[in-house]
Image (cartoon, rainbow, N blue to C red; front, side):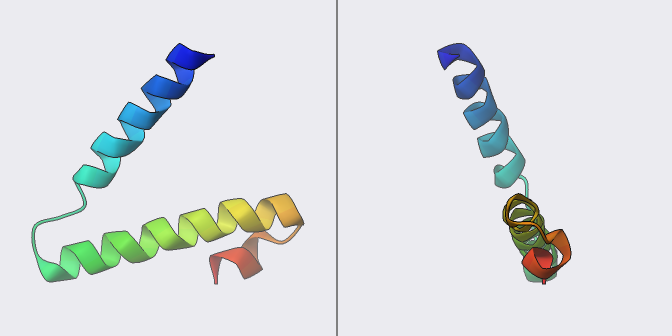
Length: 53
């Protein structure tokens, strides 16, 4: 359990570290990450579309 959570944390850090070089790239990737996180939380509460918005 501890090794898998450490691997997941490392993967998330590497993924979020490569968000883009220009301001537009960073804005787009930040918006997509936010929508994805909202959809994930929304799916737990029953409505992923509302969470993504």
